[in-house]
Image (cartoon, helix red, strand yellow):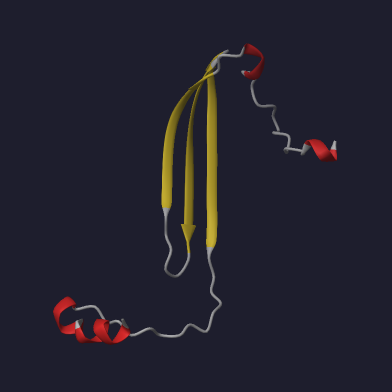
Amino acid sequence: MQVAAIAREPITGVDPAYEESTGGGIGYTLGLLMEYQFAPQLFIGSRLEIEKSRNYEPSRFLVYVRHSLDKAAAQPVPFPPQPFVPTAER
């Protein structure tokens, strides 16, 4: 396949040569989340995720409206927020 790819380079304009990587590199991720409670069961929120590295740069932005059917589950988030503790560690 490599020989065929090299032969098609003048037609496709794609250089099929693979350059070895020495590895390593730096990347970072940033995530932000905001949610506001409008009514006892109605929330609006947004989420931003940015990931950057040498050859990988996806970014996502989401705006949503959430309605809770269960009044007990529609409690506001405590301030400051409490970290999640798995059931096995309680």
